[in-house]
Length: 150
Image 1: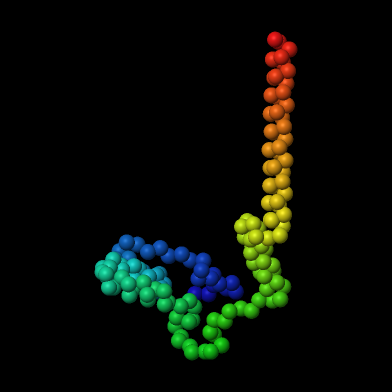
Image 2: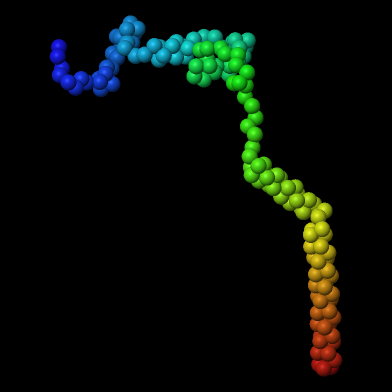
């Protein structure tokens, strides 16, 4: 069957499975779909106290890509903590120092916070004195008014 120079790609054709094909198991779907369906069907049957714990352990142990297929003992593949560059380290140290300073600031243990608290205490004292003075002046005015009325 000669199709000429340009042949159609197999991705252009879509085949849909019928209910009969699904039940007979003769679908044209890839095997990976069948395996996933088989695993999904087996899960409800095996839900018991001991089996459920083992099953969740197996799922967490599964590796991605080719690691799940081939077991390799390569010392170079051991996960290392990535070393940060100098700028990144300095940035992190700067953020931590700022957080530490702000915590001490809230607790009132830094020089600046002590000065602020002293200033606030002085302002409160001045306001209290001013309020007391105003009250005395009001009382004096009321006395004068009372004397004038009599």
